[in-house]
Amino acid sequence: MSRTSRLFIKSLDTSKSCNLLNRTVWDPWTVAKRYYPAPVKRFYLNASVARGDTGYEIHLDRKPLKTPTKKALTIKSEKLANAVAAEWCAQKDVIAPNVMHLTALCNTVQDNPLRKTKDDLIGAVLAALPMDTILFRSDDNDKLSELQKEKWDPIYNWFQDHFNVEVPLATGIICPEIPDETLDKIRDFLDSNNFEAVQGFVFGMDSIRSVVLTTATVMNKITPKEAVHLSRLELEYQTARWGTVEWHHEVELFDSIARLSAATLFFDTHT
Image 1: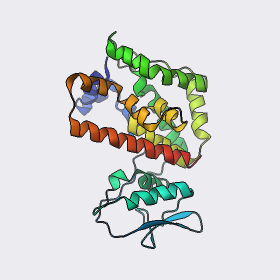
Image 2: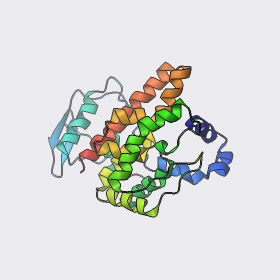
Image 3: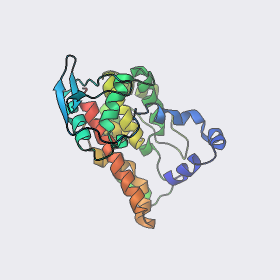
């Protein structure tokens, strides 16, 4: 069954979706919601980085930027702090928090509004692996199937070889059963990173619905842009055949690239 068919099933009435696919399987994708404050008018002229007692701070006209819980935002990495300051410098008349992904990630790890632990986040990744986008292939021996093999198999095979694990492909809409050994090795990989890095990983995973592609991205096997295009392979195949809703698909594409790029930078600056 193609991804289009699976998306149709997902769009069914909630009660029917629960009966068909077990509602809990969708929960991992929403485990790490970002902490975005409400939009406000721009109230500052400049954004800069300053060294504080416990890390770097973002100053808006010399006043320290605060998190939604009114604590001074503190960032350990100077590189990340400069990137967050750049997000604030890029704002126009109205601050658009929905595109300030690094700021949201920093707010999330510092305030931790959902009180998630690293183990919670790792558990979400492991639960999401059986639903990975690139594990679901077209049932038809058609051009899409050939394209999936050509584009997805190199990363799919790299993932298995790198961790020396087996990740079965899905059968129809049925999620594959991931071997315990595979889950243990992925858990060890994630657990070797700190809470902040894992939070960034989950944000990337949420953005493209793929543990495999997110892993390849944070390990510099592929770029965020390449990962996003791979995650949208069937969508781009179908739009090439039937046409595109230009404003919608293009906005979605660039937003996904921005999100995964932010996640990759966030992961990198915490490892």
